[in-house]
Amino acid sequence: MVISRKTLNVLVAIAFAMLPLVGTANNPSDSTVFAHNEDVAHTNEHGAEESLSKKDKVDAYIQHHLQDGHDFNFFSDEEKGLHYGFSLPVILWDNGLQVFSSSKLHHGEAVAEHNGNHYVLHHSKIYKTDAKGTLNYDEHHHPTNVRPLDFSITKNVVSMLFTAALMFFMFLGLAKSYKKGAIPTGFGRVLEPLIIFIRDEIAIPNIGEKKYRKYMGYLLTVFFFIWILNLLGMTPLGINVTGNIAVTVCLAIFTFIITQFSANKDYWKHIFWMPGVPVPMKIILMPIELLGTLTKPFALLIRLFANITAGHVVIMSLIAMIFVGKNLAADLPISLGLTLFISVIEVLVAFLQAFIFTMLSSLFIGMAVQDHHHDEHHSEDLLGEHDNAIV
Image (cartoon, rainbow, N blue to C red; front, side):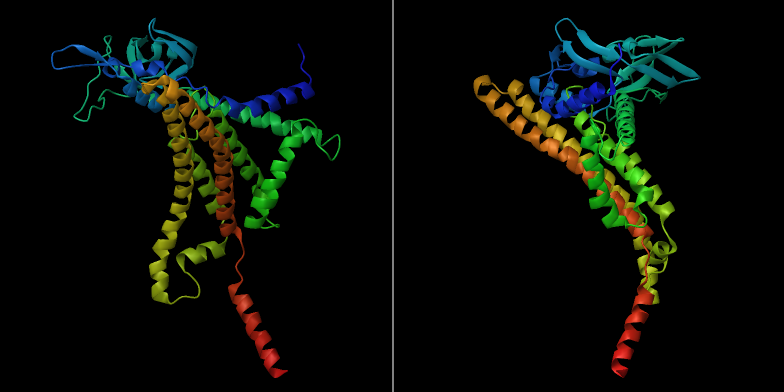
């Protein structure tokens, strides 16, 4: 079956527009509450096992939602112990390359055996163990078992690959539509105003008309990459890519590298030998300015990570009110109403965080590439005042 490009663009547009509408569909019961016997039940003073309370289950679900995973789990049947979803490949380096399906781990409920090695999943991390799945703990209740190098294709990786492919086809379709005329067609009509907005409101004011084109590719990429991932994080798939600090660190490092390698001599001069101040102050300001080059990307990564994580926690907590509260008739409308309200705000935050990250990145790049003519302007002002005095 051949799908025309126009039909494909319409389907992509509909799917993209429907993402925020399913933000409240997260199922508050999840199999990872039962990820390990240590998490499922605990032994009381008499040695009997006690089931987790509803609040403990909700806390475990929220923690799982914020973490990465080795499989997609849509929903689970707790009574039968069945999980519905699909597994992802596990790629480990443990005395050689070890590749197997995450279905062997069975959501942390089973010990995976591969090439004579045994592995167990505990809190979304894979540890090497024995055939019984023994885990040893330290005084802080952290596993001390060996952790092999994990290069697995996780939920976050799949989400980023999907986002990258989606962006590639969107912009490829936009580029092809310009061959037919100056006005884009299909989904390109949605992309063009956003691209013009980033160019006219972010790139040009912060970087300048002469140098902005060199960095438009990066600014467009980081904006749409963060925005789409933020919207995917509101779906019931349990994806929280931008709430993973490792991802925000990488994005901030890209901005840092581009800024430092694009910087001109005036930028470095203002860092290591600030003009227009006494020599003792130059020496004092040098380490402060040098530290400032590191605090800027740090502010980028923390802002994005903290805002997205906080939004997910609030939404999950509001949904949990339905299951934790005792009066279902009273708690259900209140919880759904608050969840809907926060979800609408999260749609705005998803765009706002992508905009802020892109704007600050362009601002930092603009500070590094702009030309400084303080001495020349000062000389011209003095010359003008002297001529006026003569006249």
